[in-house]
Length: 322
Image 1 (tube, rainbow, N blue to C red):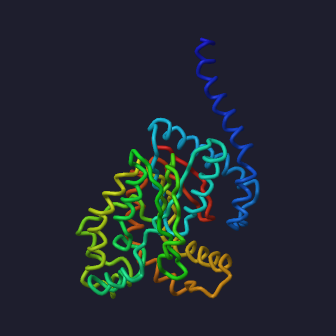
Image 2 (cartoon, helix red, strand yellow; image 1 turned 90 degrees about the vertical axis):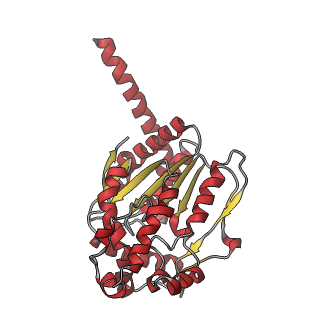
């Protein structure tokens, strides 16, 4: 009996020792990163607790998934606007690189937005609302599939990825694009709609906000976006191995946190570049509302990891599905 007990306890002790070792090696870089991101609304004790309870267990989970697959692991991370996706993937990248020595690449679906010129063209041909970036149909899905394809190729060749500047609402010149010089072992692809499922056509009929009610009376905009989810987006989402979902309390928090995000952007840029004002943000989040609400229902069932946030913008619970 004692031997059986020891056999089950020893692996737990070893795992705990590794977690402690990981904590000691990444703690300094983790806190430095949070300061750089201007995360000042949490105490050091709260930040440390999150590192121990959330980020280190997630990183060990990712490492295990990578080892099991034996080649580049593709992870999709999604959550409502302003939920903190960029911060989460930044932390994971630090731990995976510092402790596990993994070559990790992080990409945002935002960098694959179609150019302003392309969106202007779509808005004149299909519907005026497509001029605004965000919904399915405003991303260059062919470029995303090429990106995944380049990494999956047997013989790796360096390539470039686009970079989008939200302050000018357009893609930057190619000379500013990201250079991918070596095959990453782990790819984290983050974005508000990553993993989103289409709705039934019957659910599209009833408008969910004033934007849909008065500016999409014929359902053209929402139907077209939904069709994109059914086909193009479904194809590249299928190339992702596992999904991580950040579950926010309710949609009202999207506006509150998006407003906070915009204020941080203004401080960081310290420039006269275009920053959205209160009323503009209120309208902007309406573009995302339908898909976001559907993701609240679908993603907790689909995602391998669910991070639950509270009203204070803190991850207070983590659930591993597999």
